[in-house]
Image (cartoon, one colour):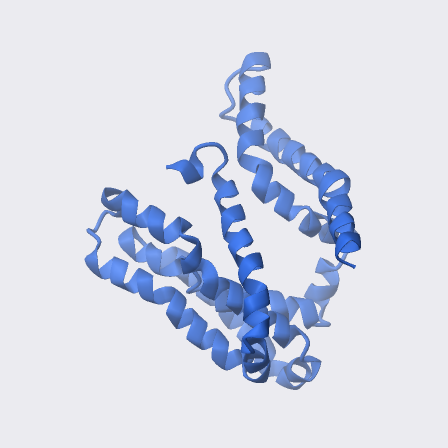
Length: 236
């Protein structure tokens, strides 16, 4: 309840703080070195660990997940259950550094990218009821991780298209959009109803997208980027 009281996406900030707190212990404990040697193996292990709580939940939950909101909120918001996702991201970050791995992948790597896209579409089309829980807390993180890494290290036409400056800027501002979109949407809808009328039309939706995108870009330049530079200077 508290996680969605003011700003729904804001719950993830506590999870990120946990990740930042755990990272030094993770590095000093030697886990980074182990993952560097066998990142693909660790991605598979972490995927299974992240899915285990959800498998048990699916077995025990009723057919209508809405009848067990307490369990669902725990699975969705408890930070420790998100640690496998965090470590999976580190594994793919290590894979990004292995240019030789991706250069040798060739056609197999391209087919893997297409297969991941198909898996995502199939997951969203075929999942229903309580079974959709299986796609939370990291079960699909290897799939998304592969797509992101493939696009980050690739040199194909899709990668070059996504490297266009406007798209890169939108990507950089995406975190601000994620964190701010719910309260800004409520504020914009309130002003729209008072000044224009009902918001159930495409004009409201189009103007809302422009508004949210503009505020997110502004937040990135005026808040996020300066704070990032300040923290880097403080840590140097």
